[in-house]
Length: 82
Image (cartoon, rainbow, N blue to C red; front, side, top):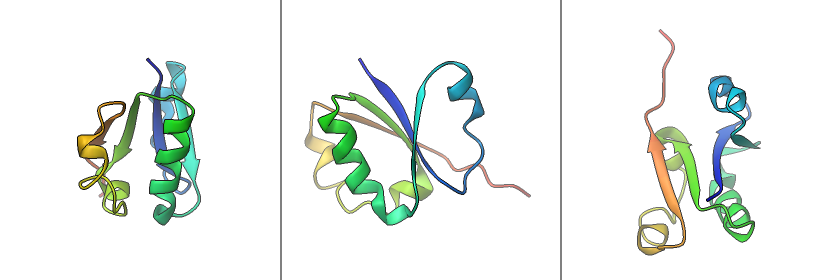
């Protein structure tokens, strides 16, 4: 099982996964989320963690990946700074 996080380059709150040795992939624009998921799927990642904010930019999460048993997407709440 291969696990990774996808983060937007302007996000800074991914230090804990890095400390535990979990791969953290970075995208330059939120609109690249679907391309990055497909790339990671080709690299045989089975679990991908993304923030709800990034997930909102995906057109395929609901209509494609929901029914794809080869990949698990975990959508986490975005931590807003106040």
